[in-house]
Length: 246
Length: 321
Figure 1 (cartoon, rainbow over the protein chains, first blue to last red):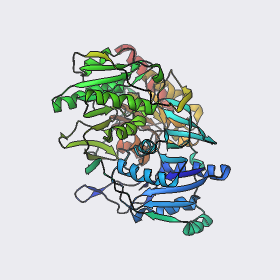
Figure 2: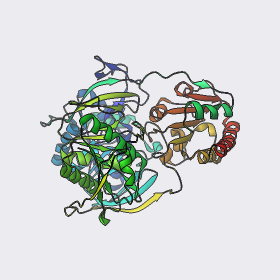
Figure 3: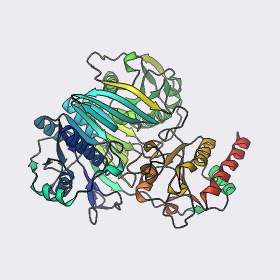
Figure 4: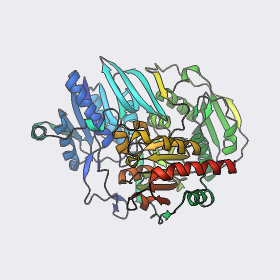
C-alpha cells in the first residue's frame, strides 16, 4: 500500500497571531511552525500502517522552501520520502489541484490529510482532492483500518460517530482519534539523522488557477473587562436581564 | 437566485438550516433576488418560508436516507443548475463541511467556509470569515461565477422574514452513483444535546479533579438544556470522550452561552470557544487566564458553586416558565 500524507506547515497552536503589510499578510516574525496537528495524527496512523502492514509512506507539502524543516520533521518521524511542490499555497482549490497531480503521478492508494489546517481553517483540500482524483472520501475521520483494498473508517458526526465501509483509493480528512495524543512521536536522534539522507524531492508546480483571493485580515475587537460577581443569584440575574441568554 | 441547502435530521429541519435560510435571504435582498431551499427527505418544510425562502425543492429518495457526501453534493449541484443559482449557502455542520468541497469541484465554484457576516460587497463578492481558529478574521473574494458559502454557526441569527413559499418536488438523477460507501453503524446519544446544536454549553476542566465529579456538570447542563464539553487535558486523560473536547484541535463552539468550570483558559482552548457570544468562568484561581476572555466570572470553589447554581437555576426556571 502506498500512502501519501499531506502536510500543512502551520504556526504552533500557542502562536500570537499578527498581520503585516497593511494587514494583508500573516506576520511570521517570532512564530514557530509545526506540522498541522490534524495532519500529525494522520502521519502517526500512517506509521502504524508502515510498521504493521508494510506500507510505504510519502509526505507532501505545497509551499516554498521555508516549509522544508516541517517536511524533514515528518521524515524524522518515519516517512520514507518527502515531496515539496514549489509554489506558495494560495487557496484550497489550487492546493488540491497541485496535490491531485502528485497523487496521479504517484499512484497512491490512501491519501491522508487533516480535517482542516489550524491557520486558514478551510477544511476543503481533502474533499476536493478526493473529487479531483475520483477517490472515496471520509471527513473528520477518527479511526481507520485497511484490509486489502477495503477500508473501515470511523467518522465523527455532530453528536456522535458512525462507522463506514468503503474501498481504496481513499482520501481522509483526519483528526485526533486516528491515534491518541500519547501515540504522537517526537523524532529521536536516529530518526533525525536518517531524515537528512532521505529524499526530499522538489517538484515544480503545474499551472492552476485560484478561485478565491484573501484580501485582508483583521483581529477581533479587544474584549471588555470581565464582570466578577459574588453570588450565583447575581450571575443568574445578569445572564437573564443583561446578557439575555437564559 | 440564492440556493440554500436546508439540512434535516430524522426528517426534521435543523435549526442551523433555518439560520442559513435567513442568511440566504439577507444576500438575496442585497442582490435583488429570491431564495430557493433544497431539502433531502425532510418531513416538514413549512418553517422555511418564515425565514425567507420563496421556493422549496423537496427531494424524497430512499437512496438518500443515510448521509452520503458525494450523492448529497450531487443533489445540491443538480438543484443549483436547475435553478441557475449563483450563490449556494451551506451551514458549518459536519455533513455540510463534508460535502462542500465535493460540490465546489462539481460546480467549479469557489468556496469560503466559516463566514460570519453578509457579503461586504456582491461585486466583487467579498466575504468575512474566521481564520486562525477564531483568533482573526479574513476578507476573501470569490472569483468564480458560482459561489459557495459555509455560514459559521450562530453568526447571523434566526432572523425571521415571512415569505410565501411554494413547494416543488425535485427528483435528482442518481443513476451515476455507485454508493461505494456504506454506513454500517451509528453511535449517537439521542437523548443529549450536541455541542454543534447547543445554544448553551457547559464545559469543565482539570479543576473537577476526576471523572467521578462530572455528575454536577451534567446536572447543570440538564437544567439549562445545554451540551456538555471539556478541555483537552480532560479528554487526553480519558475522563471524558474525545467528542466533548473543545478547542483548537477539538470542536469549535459557537453557542450563545459558554460556561467554563475549572478550566484555566489555555490559548488553544480560548481560540476554540471564542465564537461563543457570552462566556462565564467559574474558577478558584483569580489569576486563571480565562477571566481575561470572559464576560462574567465567579472566583471560588466549583464544588460549592456549581451545585448551588444548579439549584438556583431550577428555581429560576420554575418561576420563568
